[in-house]
Length: 456
Image (cartoon, rainbow, N blue to C red; front, side, top):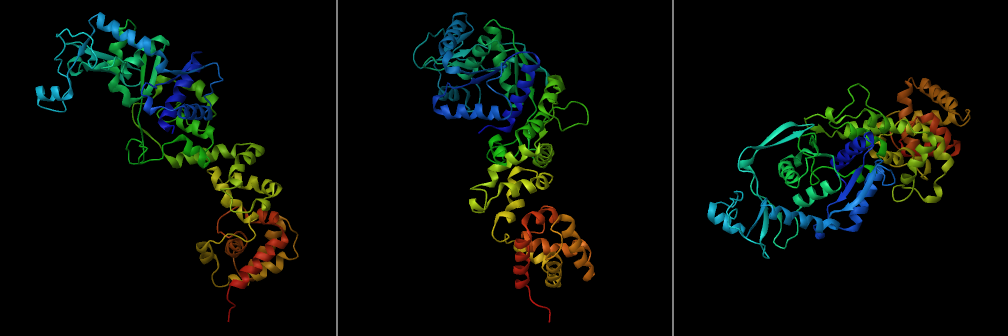
């Protein structure tokens, strides 16, 4: 699963790297073997590719695996110990709780001056400054001071000598020449530790930029347990990659004008890290759908048809495969293109064309087939049996039937639409019925008339 927040961060990093003719570095932090699988790496690369971040692009570097640099990370840990910037500790959690009287207090520095050497089971802790503050200059958040007294001496290597994430990350950043770290604001609290490690290893810190948290309609941080957050799920539902990119790029940043629908190439040129907002960004699915509708309508006809094909076959299509006619779909595709918000909606717009009988929607039937519907259908059937089988001819025939019964066109059209298409809402009636053909249309009207009682 590739979180939409991660996708937003990746896009901001990608824009920044390409603007500066730099590199977007994909690092797989795989030091915890139980939480990493090869197929998950493939999933990340596929998700990035879907939003335009291709490993074939010269700006792409990776994937780099953190586990491949374990030796350099161990050497850095030993160097920090040799320089008295770290020390070994044999305290257990229970030892700390016994000394402090609490299971929740941070480490108390008990082993700082004990002069312990390495032994199996002893963790290596970084010696944080006693006084002053660690100042993080953040492009988005501004200047943030973290009192050093509030930073415990944190573990940088486990009892078996293996480096923990905070050290491995700093070492890899320095080795790979990372100049900018652009990530979610939830990582801001870890930044003073990382900055202290950068400094201790003889490197100036990178440019920090912590992006605003993405929230749902209740202003709660997006959660995979509660919200739909996987990029893959949105793409599978029929959101276009370019619409997702357009929308995600505007979560917490904007170009400063009133234009929202833009191709990525324009957004990349306009993007400025300094203009990212501090306030939380609302992930509005309705707005995303509106963006997607705009991008769908902008597709060339042939690409729209190609994009729909997934939903025109099993398991999405309710009709038998042999009933599908590509030329029939092509004839109505343009009508559907103006109405969709997501590609998966295409099935319900065109299923009636490929099913032997129209879909049965009880609510639509009850709404349209009221008193007088039988008489209207009979009149329309009479008009349509001999009219020109064109959109204009069909409309003229229905208008004549409506006049005969003293009805407005919309009122007369409702039972006809349900009789032929099965629903009260759908494609433009006359243009799409012209594609269905006279024989099938009249047969459906006849079947509907048979289901309606005669007026006494």
